[in-house]
Image (cartoon, rainbow, N blue to C red):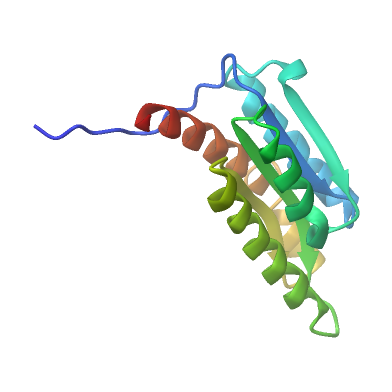
Length: 154
């Protein structure tokens, strides 16, 4: 019989960090609220959640790395909103944010989840930061599941 390990969302006794981009802050605030809501509803205490605000999505990986390297957090939830503009700037920002967040996870062994919205327009970003769909809440769910899964693998 194979050993089957499935992730669970249990945050009791665990600490998590959220790195949030100030650019498009009104949208990102809803992502942060969604992430905090998921964490606390699954047993994480308010005092065990750290929220670090950075200027924009491009800066998320550096702060995520610093937090992950501290060894205090079971996961780092990265949230932001990059909306397409008239130039290619949004492409460079979103690609580098995604690559950087992924590298932090692999390099540190701490799950860093991707809750950065990459939208064609503001309406899409707002739709993905709402009550029915909230990429911050989804990233928090993934962080909880990965934290549990990694402890089960040890």
